[in-house]
Amino acid sequence: MKMAATILIVDDEAAIREMLGFALTQEGYHYQVAADGEQAWQQINEFRPDLILLDWMLPGISGVDLARRLKREPSTRELPVIMLTARDEEEDKVRGLNVGADDYITKPFSPMELIARIKAVLRRSAPLLSGEVIEVNGLKLDPDSHRLSVGGAPLEMGPTEFRLLHFFLTHLERVYSRGQLIDYVWGNNVYVEERTVDVHIRRLRKSLEPSGHDGLIQTVRGVGYRFSTRS
Image (cartoon, rainbow, N blue to C red; front, side, top):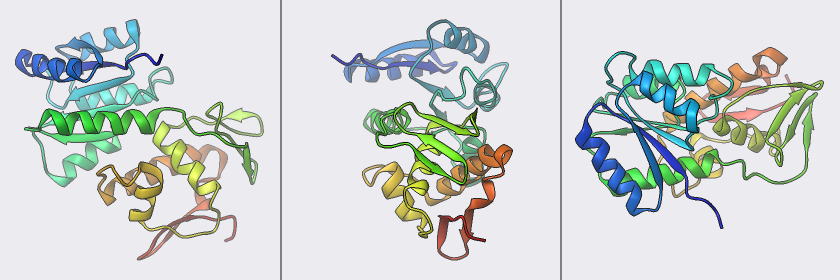
């Protein structure tokens, strides 16, 4: 029997923690709570949650700074993070995604929307890809073990970037629009803004920079992206 995911709620408002905890319990999830960034960091290192609901505005270390710290550390880099915030400007959303958040939900939100986002992120973050090992230009991707390497040296990247790269490597030379990538990589039953694709493409390129493979992800102006070994 599959164990229920454990979710860490990081919010300085007790009423919001209680509301989120109730919604999670109703859906069968386990949860822990933290009122600030330092408490959250301790909790993360103690029990390692499956997903973090992280408020943008926290006393002391901000949610954005905590997300940046999580994505900087190898031991916590792949922990999925959903930012909770009252900020709804596009530049704020992009900033949250740029520091490593996997999704972004603006307050106020319904418990139904939150649960849908959680399920979508957990589904994307799980290493559920299966299939044969793929090797292109020395870049070796093993879907079953969720490992990526070049010449035996491992390359690190987040789960969404891994899925995006897996799709590109199995669909070489073809151009895909942002909408198509959302359907194929995120799933057509998940709401993801097209700007989010650009953020993850940038993160994927950054992950591939050390091996020099970042240039293989080509932008086709006015159309979308492709992975190509041709110049």
